[in-house]
Image (cartoon, rainbow, N blue to C red; front, side):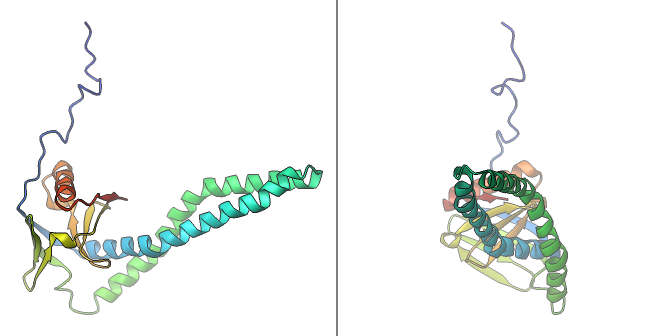
Amino acid sequence: MVINPYEPSRVPDPMAGVVFDLPAEIKYEQTMDDIVAFALDYNRRGIVHKATAGCVSAVVIAAVVVGFPALVGFTVESVMMGVIFTIVFVLFLVLLPFARRRIKWLRNDLFMGALLRYLYTRGDTSILIGPRRLSISSTEVVERTPTSESRFSTKLIQKLIVENQRAYIYVSPVQALVVPANAFANPQVFEAFIDALEKLTGVSAIRG
């Protein structure tokens, strides 16, 4: 019998055997990049994402309302109108992902990112950036800094988002603890940390 070492059942799973045990304490340095990344992600998911979904819905409705009568009219003009509309609609769908990425970069990463950095650095940033110690147990999450300590019940964790090599642990609709992936020994341990949070809270992580 010939054994194929590349069969899915025989390829080593990098996550196999990697377990993140709780309770645990994570030490890391929170930077201005972490704060800005969270603000941009929150803004995109709360406003831009919904606006984009509304625009796409409007286009689909227009395709049904305008395109269908044009195609079933069986006149030369209506058929030509339907063909042109269909081509424009297909091009729109093809170009939309590229346009969204460009608009996101121009609005968020370039303009909003620079504006947020300016606003954040106008005052004392010691509460925002610097060393962090995040203690997680079965009942609470404690974030300690050199100047403050915040405690949250694990029951308050309502959303987990993993994006841009960071985990956003939402403890309210507008507040999240930002944990960078570089706080862990390797990406596998970071993923095991996310898995442990999902099991602890019953909340499925949303990956960007």
